[in-house]
Length: 287
Image 1 (spheres, rainbow, N blue to C red):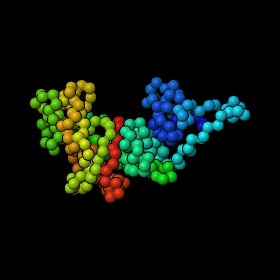
Image 2: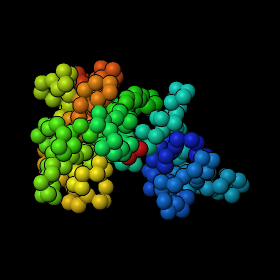
Image 3: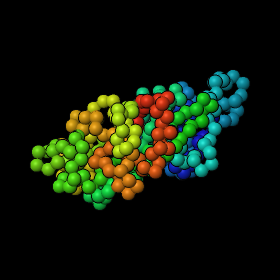
Image 4: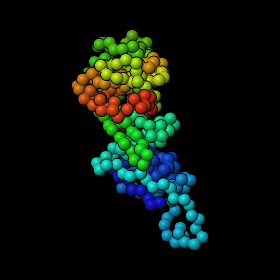
């Protein structure tokens, strides 16, 4: 198999998925210490399906007596022009961070939702910000990837911070017992969602199937980071971090939920196709 030259927007996971291997095998074949550091124009040796790097071409590889190996399946057709970078980005995140269930769903042709978070300080955004991208991915029978992307938010609006308006149960918890209620957000990882009974924000919404893990801003600075002591909340959010329609085009209307711009929400519901697939895997990763 020829080497692969890294193009703009590609990730190691996306490249690996294209050639039917894993990002770990691809990193090992190229002696990479940091799998996140690849650059445009970099030439990568692609391992065969046994995990070995492909041999160099030439007489030694193709002459008499050489052991013939079954060729790996060809890469799927490229996405429509203008969509290559975006599709490879989301597919790479799914392959790198998705759990076994999410990957199995994708391979079976089921719809999988992948969200990419751009961390923002909620103190600077009282109305929240639709600066995250949420995509619905589906692998078709011919191996091509169908994808729709939407503007969303995976973090709270500052309007729900301590001393401001009170949000739904589970959105505030005093983790460090300092008398101040701590806003939270969903921890990066894998979740399962299904259609919620009854509408929310005047539209269909989705609820997690299990108790969710949140992280809390315990020092009230608007960021979720290592400066927040005792920030991991493994049960306080319960299943309250929904996926739902945003409050308006300029206000997410959420203290922690995964929200999508109202003008795009019907298209999101159509992409999810809840009539044929009421439950789906949700992969939340950093952009």
